[in-house]
Amino acid sequence: MRAIVALFIAAFIHANAMADDAVVIDKSKTSYWVVYRFPGAEAESIRAKIAAEPKIEMVDWSAFKADPQTHAGAVIIKDEYPGSNLLPGVLALLEKYPKTPFGITWTGGIAFTRNDYRHAERIYRLYQERPEEYERSKVSGERSRDPIFPANHLDPLLAR
Image 1: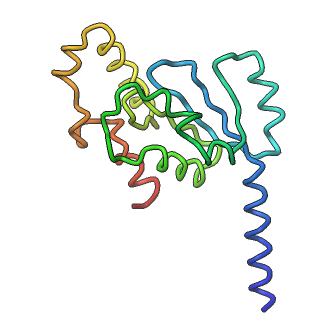
Image 2 (image 1 turned 90 degrees about the horizontal axis):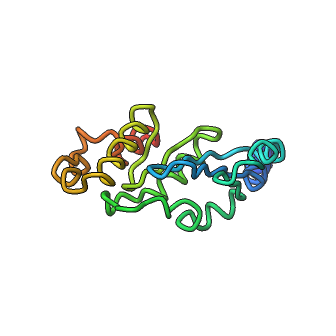
């Protein structure tokens, strides 16, 4: 019985600690936004560091979790992965990996590595400068060739 009570108390403490968490959304790039979840205890020091950055905002984890589309979905200009459940996947990543940055790309992909971020920037530039060439050369329909294909990160990181 004591073990059950201890587990219940530990789960309650963990849930309450997460309720105080915050999410930083770095909107400084047009081709992707980066989201991080931080413990509530660190929120004030982070808020002070980002205060002078107009394209970086902080929101409560509970608000972000309740409506990720409002807080981070606007970066998706051209959703090339319909049905990927990107935002629920990003929520799961933030839940499982606090303090880890994840990029949401303009195509609805996920950037996690330096190569992913560079790819998102390169294809966005091509889309802006030569949209016809972008459409001819895009790899978003080919999971094996597309570094930002959502399932390429969601599946291994969430053990699916």
